[in-house]
Amino acid sequence: MTTANNSNQHYKGLINRYKKYLPVKEGDKIISLSEGNTPLIKLENIPKQIGFDGSIYVKYEGLNPTGSFKDRGMTMAVTRAVNEGSVAIICASTGNTSAAAAAYAARAGIRAFVLIPEGKIAMGKLAQAMMHGATVIQIKGNFDEGMSLVKEVADHAPVTIVNSINPYRLQGQKTAAFEIIEDLREAPDYHCLPVGNAGNISAYWLGYSEFYDKKQVKNKPIMAGYQATGAAPFIHNKPIKNPETIATAIRIGNPQSWDMAVNATVESGGWFEQRTDEQILYTQKLLAQKEGIFCEPASAISLSGAIADIKSGKIKQGSNIVCTLTGHGLKDPDTAISQSTKPMKTINATLDDVKRAIIREL
Ligand code: F0G
Image (cartoon, rainbow, N blue to C red; front, side, top):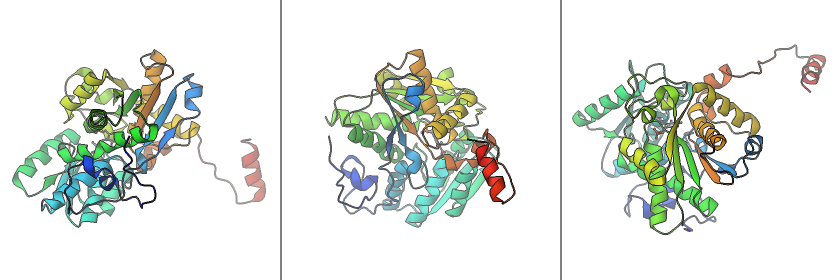
């Protein structure tokens, strides 16, 4: 077990905490917003409700500075870019990567260009990219087309790609696995997470394997990756041309980290599964209303998948499960409000009317 985190010290972000495991050199300027160190929350009500006698923890990555796990990779990618003299970064994004790229570029004082699929990113993410001063380019196409364009542009222009094909991104993201091992004092039995471009499942496997190889931990989890039914290339074992899902963060048909993600499931004895949009939204609401935890739709697929696999017996009773909640629910207020079952009431501003409104609900 590592004791890299000294609790008496002001937390300075994951590069500072895990520098001996990361590609940084003495004297490098670190670009950080104190990302990482996110809570691992044990669910109390949902396991009882579904008759599960093990433990389900959620790694709440929505509490990173820009509200998603992307900050872990971005601190590393932008730190390397800046120390290698880059003055501009570029990415294609379903929203969260663009928000993180924009924020870390602002922090570093460099330019950010983000390509997003027109009309298909959640409002909070767009607001972030715009607020942090990125050049936001909407394309009349999907994420996969944006990704191909970014690769071509980077061949011709002095810009550093900060999508997860940038190897430093996964190095930063692997630290989430380190934190989980330190919190639990072991690796979980199962790790469940959403899969879009497939970088994150690959990064977690890197992290778990690295701590295992370095004898910081004695076990490794079984990795389970979940995709939305309309955007499930790993389920069909081939790229999907027109991916569709309400979980816009994972509306991806041609994942860039294909081989590494397959390797993570094969090596760990895990699997890919799919969940429908209805199942995703149901679990998002369940988590919000039974546990008080608000995540975005794409994130809820990890718990939705875990619950389905507990019920089918694929995940064993009595085990420890970690589900990554990749992004904060506030990223996508439109989807949250539109699926709310309790409509707002408008009443007169009188004590009687307020009393009546409350009593009716008690
Ligand atoms: N969950 C959220 C909230 C995401 O934003 C993403 C990916 C994923 C899960 C899937 O992770 O791609 O590593 O398999 N978002 C990227 C973006 C593609 O552009 O923000 P992955």
